[in-house]
Length: 157
Length: 160
Image 1 (cartoon, rainbow over the protein chains, first blue to last red):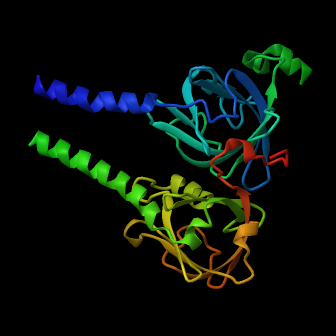
Image 2 (cartoon, helix red, strand yellow):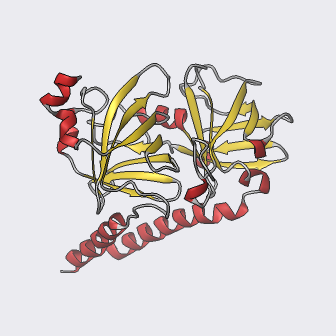
Image 3 (spheres, chains in turn red, yellow):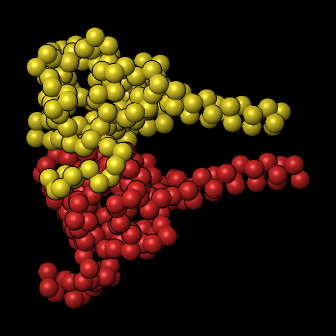
């Protein structure tokens, strides 16, 4: 009985702390939007297309239509995003997956620039995005996330 | 016994968190002036970009270092340094001095204008960075200011 209580006492704060999140400071509004752009690697040699969806309430999905820098398996995985004054964090599985990006949000609200500062990747589907990589995203108000992984996109591409 | 163990874990977590928090109080004004995100050429290659994330709590994340550590064992080796600046010397030290770097901040630096010229003066361990040597130069430029007000932070030169 006592052991069970101790376990609960440990687990509850972990769940609570992981559920503390913010949609960002005043002046930022990235939720419920699809963001499409490129990852430029820190070595400057490569550039890849990525699609991020920050959902209201904290859910986050990301993918790469070309299945290179983010593997397709990632599309089916749900993570949580949070945004404070300086950083956007993406977490999953009670913090076992963790990535922290410094960001700049353009004044017109249509461009989001992120640099991966640190990460803790137990999730190999995302591991090709490395610290120092630069991600430049634009808001896409026309298409939905699935479009970028559909035959329509590949045929147009 | 279990209670003692749990108490020890809780105290350790609080102590480590407290250290980061308190560390920020003792940052010199010189060190505080570095707060923000800077970039320079890479530690091994000028073609790559290395970012330095100087935080108000006294930690600095160096992306090339972090990336290198992640390829190894990031549990034993912290992915950040604690930094300090005294008399124009920037020190970046890891727990117990596992690795440390010391840079002279050259007189031609203008930190308030987002330019900092660092010269390597000492290091204890270069790990996989084969090209770090004494008197090597790093030219740092400010990428982000980490202002408290989001509306003044525009990379694209919009209205502030």
